[in-house]
Image 1 (cartoon, one colour):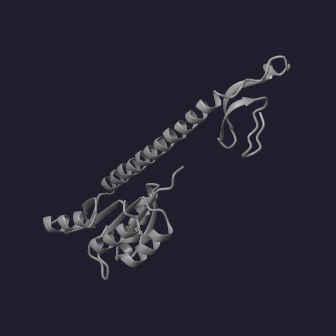
Image 2 (cartoon, rainbow, N blue to C red; image 1 turned 180 degrees about the horizontal axis):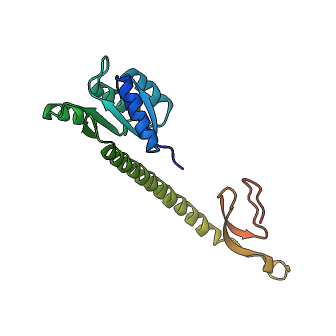
Image 3 (tube, one colour; image 1 turned 30 degrees about the vertical axis):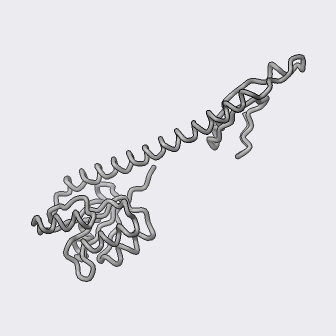
Length: 194
């Protein structure tokens, strides 16, 4: 199962503890940072699926954090929480690469909906990448199959033709694929024999 870490950044430690408890009750893995600097260290060390950051923090605010996060992880998904919902703040947030601004204090149900949407986006992105990879592998296999059609079949009269067949076989242990004439399905990668 894919790991989905949520990073919550806020300078209010009591608020962070409360948010962490609420998210853990909802079975969402939460990492917390009480400053932008600490958040950047976490981002460098762990895969983060979504970042919730407060706007007003001493030192690095939520906007600066978003810009710095984008330097490390360009496609990071960032949500900013703030009690200031003015058009100016929302415009600055969008320019900093923040995908959504949520009013603080927030409703946990609304935030869980956002997390579910982000997980779906992440899963869809992974599916798209796997699909592209699979198409590439199939193209490579198809090219090899075209080349193997030119291979000679075993000569008749050897007494082995009933043991030879043109097959495509996938190792159930490691997933390696093989195509061609074979008397025995044996994986050269992991040693599995069928």
